[in-house]
Image (cartoon, rainbow, N blue to C red; front, top):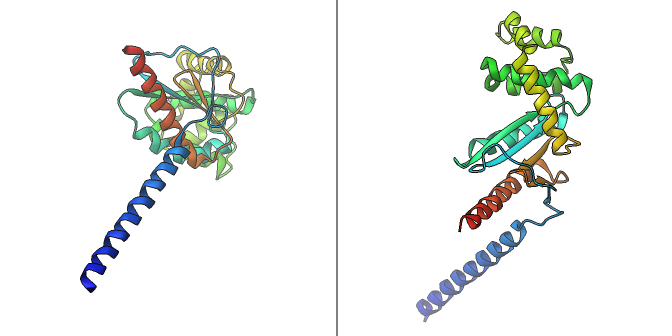
Length: 222
């Protein structure tokens, strides 16, 4: 008699586990549903993106923004996992803060010098953790020189036409999207990620919005 009872108990336990897992999956799915106004808002009118064949994700940020520094450890890993149909664009802005304007140019200067990837986190840390006063070209050039970059060449790059033009374009883009705070994430010119969420929640929401746009593009092709 003990063997049949044992079999029944095992079957009951397996059934219970299945039910629990199914309920958990249903709950997770329900929680994962995007809700307009809660998780994101529509951008009206939608903005044109550089490449209609790609899903463009823009992060508006500043190195002088403490919140941007806090978000960076979440955004970087998320960016590195994106599929080939996703284009990630980082747009440094000043939001009208004079002390942030040199940092906008610094981003593009580092990008053009090939030092951005190496110094991106270090620049966040220098300003937000070490409290370095990097609000002028002179202070920025001094700091960059301490990181092994040719100071004279970088100083020239900071004031170059290419960098100044890129910086101006970034500020114009922020105004076009009516960005009022950093960090701000926009998906495909259509959706603005809700900013009242913990940064740990943003990667999932960004994935969901990318998925939403991907589905919309797929439907539009049919």
